[in-house]
Image (tube, rainbow, N blue to C red; front, side):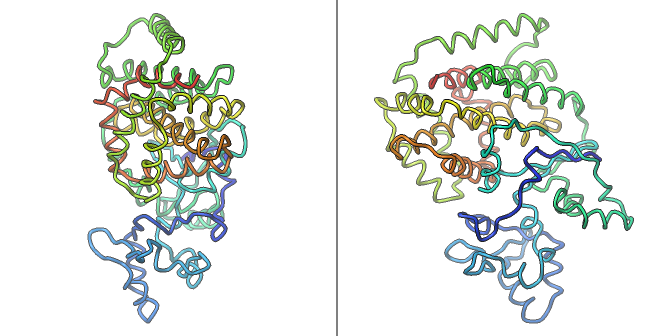
Length: 415
């Protein structure tokens, strides 16, 4: 089996109590069945203490304290279970986070979530292009002694692969390996590679790259599947590319009015305001966005922010590539390339609004720390709720504000 990880993957290690945030706070902590069985088998005072803080049922979950923290997080922001019993005693979600896994054919992809601030610190510390790195992976699902040794020796790279073998998608993505697929993985990987190349073409502004990426994915959706786009399958690729270039030029050159820009902001906000709230910080963010922006200042604010960030476009490039790496190969199972591109572009449009808000509140400055904080907040709220992801996926099919042509127009508001 091949293990694919992003180029920054091996730089990551948990900074534990040095983290300004905490992954033991603010969301549900599931206890996998194997760990639950282990806790039940402990007996004694320690076993009773642990199981008394777990809500057992179809899904076993940790009962969080009133302040939202895990009951086993001590005053030093360290885990008492880990301290007393070792990392191997932790639930799968605790040992894997912020790693997430996607598996198809003979490939396992692992990526690090931006909901972890240390991942953001690593990703945005350099303008170096993000790439995939491939490794021949030991057969963790085998039964030989060598497999167990490999797990121990290569844990820093592979993470908890034995657990991942039990659930091929450790982020909750459950797919049937026997399910018939329309397009094989090699074809999709070729499309993904071409899409990322468009995003990383630094001869062009990132807005133009994102527009080309979105239209390319729409075209590939038509050519490979012939549906989900509301359009006919094109038989003339060159003509299609020319039409795409004309559309991008029209969106770029057409003058934008404050009224048009603000209307798009409101339409986008109305959809994001429907999401399940996981973090009170998200609720506050929405209120501040609504209070800060209005028809007379929204366009000026995002344009001022864009001007001040010249030279840092690689941050949006990294975000677009991150979302592509994270979600594109879901298309292997759901046949929807375009949806993944829409999510990536919609995400940077929303993140751009959040960035401009920070820039405005900071009096015209926006640090790398701000970049990490915004990306983390967005990721925690949106990516870590299947309900929110499904809500947006449906919106991408039916809401005009997320139509490819509409989003391309919005990309150029700040140009």
